[in-house]
Every structure is written in C-alpha cells, then in structure tokens.
Length: 185
Image (cartoon, rainbow, N blue to C red; front, side):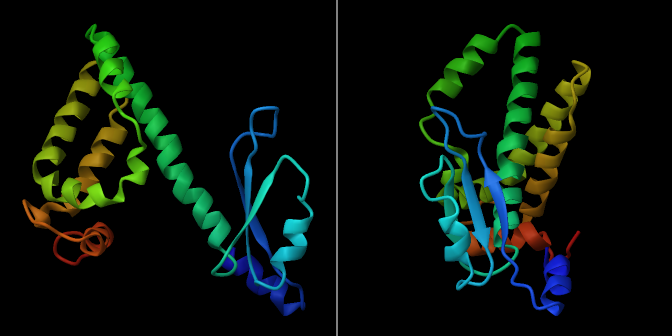
C-alpha cells in the first residue's frame, strides 16, 4: 500500500485505504470497514457509510493501517479456525472429540484478547514447543496436515531464551521478532 500511495501522491491525489472485516451485511451482521489515510480526508469517506449496514471506522496512523489490521486479524482468525478443524479431526480419529469440545466450551474469551497471558506462554514455550512437535507427529501419523503445529513450535522456539522467566509484553514481542539471540531467523 505504501508503494501504491507513493505513486498516487505524486499525481496530487489524496490516498485513503481500507479493509473490511466481517461478513457481508445482513439482518444479523454488520461488517466493519476500516479506513486509514490523512486525518482530514477520512471524515468524507466515513460519511459515505452513514445510515448503512457497514460500520465505518477511522484508524489513526496514516495509509497502511487498515490493511495491517486486516492481515493481523486474518492471521489469527483464519489460522485458528484451520487449527481448530485439524485438532478436531485428530480428536475424532481417536474418539475423544466430545471431550475436546467440552474443554473448549469452558472458554469464555478469545485467546487474542488475552495479551497479558502472552508472557506466560513465552516463558513456558521451552516445554510447549516440543509438545507441538509431538502434536505435529501425531497429526502426520493420522494423515492430517502438521504445518500449523510445526509453525507453532517454530514460534515457541523464538521464545526459548525466556525459559521460566517473567518477561513483560514488550520483551515477548521483541523476542518474537528476533528470536532468542537477536537474530532475525
């Protein structure tokens, strides 16, 4: 989006970008349309959706914020649903899908909203990473895709230097970007 914006700005255009999160409008659904760009340009675009079934919202921070939000949410929402399907398939193969659903039904919030728990995950990743590798192996044995489990293990390996620590969220995010020894592997 930054490249497209740079081209358009050279011609004197005002650039506002957007992203949609949610299903098409219906009697029960109202998608959100996020807009980003110059603050002075956003109200005119937001006004186009007044009285519609679309919840238009402005993001501060300029061009690129709306697509970044969409990709951030999509990476969690779509991957977590795919992972849930794979987990259910494995449980079903072993006849324990009812128990899996019972455990999941006890959840009242989304893991995405539990950012204060991320440091605990990072501190435990030294043992959770190998568990995810074991899960990947079990999935492979069942003829199911193991890529998501292996990817989760790879994420946890980035936190290996935080074993049993009490890191703050900023350090957890830094380690996620650079890995345990500051390399961007």
